[in-house]
Image (tube, rainbow, N blue to C red; front, side):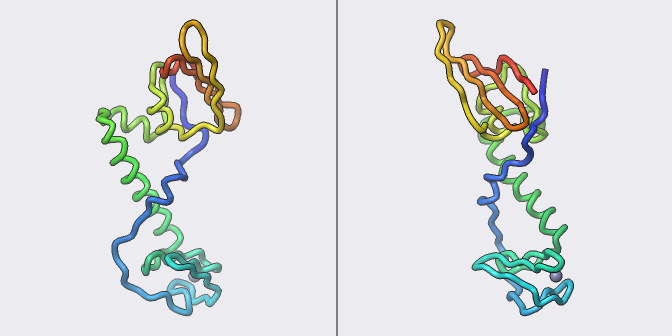
Length: 151
Ligand SMILES: [Zn+2]
């Protein structure tokens, strides 16, 4: 039995985005649509007209930025997943958001992200945990291994 991630990409990784180059200054107009409706922070700016991004000195169209952002997120995540010593097969399915009976809590956390809540029960058989995800999804653990997935 397996289940796909109900929540989507791990947004906590956003803070790991780092840019190497600094080439173009933030101009007074968007280089893509010439709009002057720009907002700028210390490291990032945005064109409110076409949603182009200015990030650490470089302009990206909306779709260029989304692609780059996804690539960078994946890069950071793959690096971390490899550090667990997992097989490529496991890394691939974790990236796709699949979890299985018998998985460790570490695998579930990487595949689905952290749960909204954890309910813990100590029994004669060990520690039972119910991980609560949005949209009525739950993952059940006994002693750190997945015993059931419900959605
Ligand atoms: Zn623009």
